[in-house]
Structures are given as C-alpha cells and as structure tokens.
Length: 277
Image 1 (tube, rainbow, N blue to C red):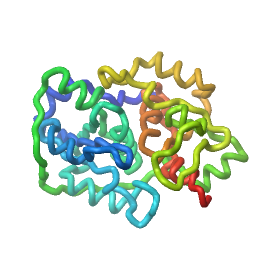
Image 2: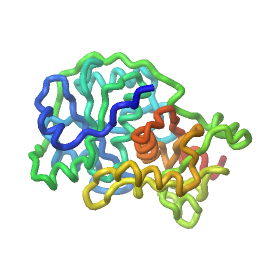
Image 3: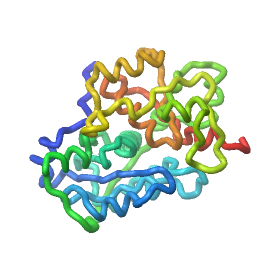
Image 4: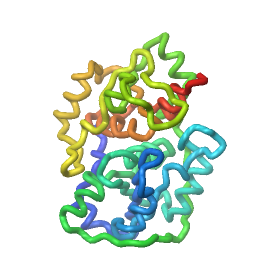
C-alpha cells in the first residue's frame, strides 16, 4: 500500500500556485454559536487572494435540525459548483489558523469523492505572519459543474454509534476540551447535557497544533497524543466532537499518520447529548 499524500500544503507551495487556473482556494473559517464577529465578516475583512467563503452551515442538510449535517451528494455538488469548483480542480482549504473547520471541509470533499483536496498548514494565521497578501470583500466565482458521489464509509450515524457502545468494534475519540469531555464544563449549545459517549477516549483537538503559529504539530507529537490517550492506531477509529467539525482535526492528524480509513460521527455530541434523548 502506498502512503497517501500529505493533505497539508505549505504557505510557500500555495503562494507559488495561488494563481493557477485549476487551484481553487476556500476559506472555511468557523466559530461556535454566539462568537462574534461572524466567520463571514472575518472573511470579508481579510482573506487569501481569490479565496471563496465555504460556509459549513450553508453546505449542509437544512431539513435536519442538528447543526451542519452532511447534505445529499446532489446538494454538495450543487453548492460546491456554485463556489466555482469543478472535479478537475485542486481545492486548497484554510481557516483562521485555529484548526476548526478546514479539516471538516476537507473530509467532506473526500467523502463526496474529490481526492484532490489539501489544507493550508497554519491557515490565515501563518500566511499573514509571513507578510503575504490578503484581500477584502467578497469573491464571486463563476459557477462550475461539480459531480459528487457520497462514500458512507467515511461517516457514522447515531444508530451505528449506539450499536458500537455494545460491540466496541470501533474506538470513539472525542476532540472536545477535557473539561467538556469530563462533564466539568457546560456545553456551548442549549439543551445539550454534559459528558461523553460511553467508552470514548479524549484527544483535545487544540493539542494537535501549535497555537502560536497555527501549524500542525510534527508526526511524532501527533502519534504521542493518540497513544497517550490509550488509542490503538491499528484498530478501527471514529472521531467525534461537539457538532462534527473539530472531530475533523483528529481525522486529519490520523490521516497524516497513514490512518486513512477512519470515520466521523456527524451528529457528534450535539446529537448524542440532547437532554431529551
């Protein structure tokens, strides 16, 4: 088996290719509910040249009351096409450098059959720290045609997670901060109780990147974070978090370690932790 290409690209690489016709840059910045300014306003104030805003809440199943659940393949293809992306493009995704939503968007592209997708290591934070150019205002791309095909192996439902509590066939790793995982801190969304899925292990996503630079930590550090939490890297893994976004940081870190066959629990704690549940 060949090792997959590193999903991360450097600012140097992107600076050299940002003008290429088939390189499309997406700003997938995301924040928890109630945090201001809104991600779209941050994007309008400053983004990479030519970058289009990828709204995690908009590219989702609007018929589902849970936050930003995976849409149908048809909707994903339509939404991404409207962002000016076609199947032949190289997609490079970044966020503000806090490693929240770029990995979620990256995993969505992989889950809908688009393998030529990368994440900018360090995101906007590193880009700006290096004095590279940014633009303001909205980029309105010319719509393109994007055909998506959904791979259900990359995503898990609540029913699958309920069954897994009994079977323990898959390890569940939760990306939330330890205080929330352990039930010592309230959840940011109303109506969600504290705690975690029975049997889950905790690898807080913020420990996987350098907060000062926004860059992901070296592979040895990533490996140590998982093994330190009791995760067996040679056994099946499902990532989870508050609402299926920061779980992608764990998914990305595992992918960089060569563990590419993981799944993401889309509903995550927003679904499992409902007080009425």
